[in-house]
Length: 162
Image 1 (tube, rainbow, N blue to C red):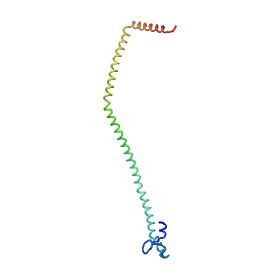
Image 2: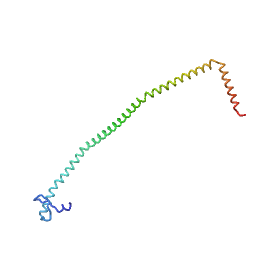
Image 3: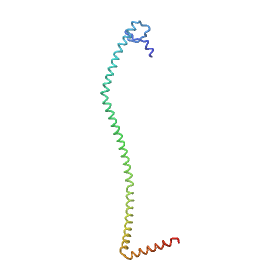
Image 4: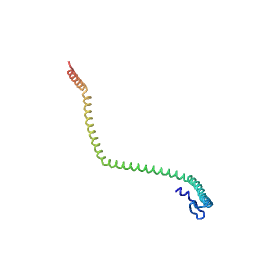
């Protein structure tokens, strides 16, 4: 295409591209001059367009940065919303599970507390009886302890090898 166009010249009379082979030098020169006249405003327009684009870039640069900031804020808000929805769903499931299992767990804990309180009452009663026996007997309590010590000591002596 580039080689084909090189052989063409703009004919100023017909304003069409024609082959330069059959043209006179004068016609060819006026065709080239006409081409320059038509392209010169395009160059000037390109220069003007570059200036306008630069001004628009400066003007729109603020809008672009503002749009990027807004985009980031919106994205962050959407991410936060998604995390909040996941948390809500998790806690809703947890609530459903706890409301189903909670009463059973509370009942089991109450039964365990009742057993422990009963055992504590029994042990407190035994302790009170032992304390009463210890302080109430006085000398006989010491004698009982002394006899138990002697009995234990005899058993230990018997168990020793001779």
